[in-house]
Length: 317
Image 1: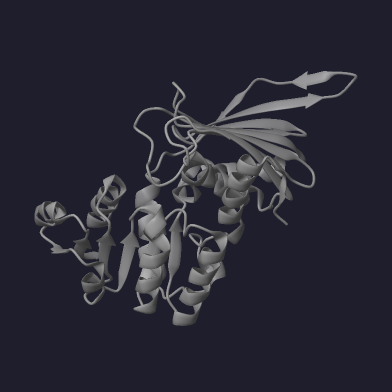
Image 2 (image 1 turned 180 degrees about the horizontal axis):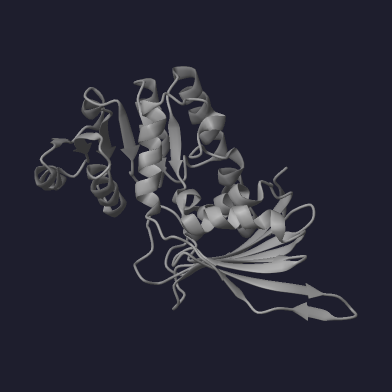
């Protein structure tokens, strides 16, 4: 049985603990710089470590849920110790750092997964299946907006929210944009944007992305306007609507919308199960890891931030 520990016991670390407890792994312990988190370990009847390096001596794998600016340092240490790692997104503060971690994992022969949990969302998986049937993509419109909780203090909405959308688009379209241009608004903090708009230009279509932690609505959805059909996906509520629609100068052919049924799942649980299975089955090939980092996902977020700061369009590929 795979021995697993959790490094970082904030809100998301608690979610990992709850899901891992039900996963069938051997949940060994937790590590956090806050000594008060020892109470959490007591609740789960597992060990507590103030220094995560001590935890590494007793596990085969870890999930890392520390603040973003600590990802590179902690993950690097875990990989050097020969441990399998699932780190919450982003993999690191830059694409360059992410590439170093991917290379290190491969050289050490261990699994490195990144917490892009929407790859395990059944609505997103179904969207990926539908895409080949809708004809050429004309354009895509996405929203990841809310104001249901205070904003994070370690990253703005581009790196925190937008990176999920970038990964979803990379995952379902299997395409990388040629360029990225973005604009942002900073209200609460001079260095962390609260809202942003990102335009991704692909060879044959474009994608518009709205990001905000100041919006009164909570929405995580995407419209894909295709040549033969338009698809709406609400990946928060895991719902899909399909609109058969063809527009020409001569006529508009429109049929009734169709609900495409989705069996709701808990993506985090499925993601962690998948990570454990990779370790158990010794699948260390990066291409065989559905949870692998797409180098361009972090790069797109980096370039979007640079574009919003400098007012320039940047080439991705």
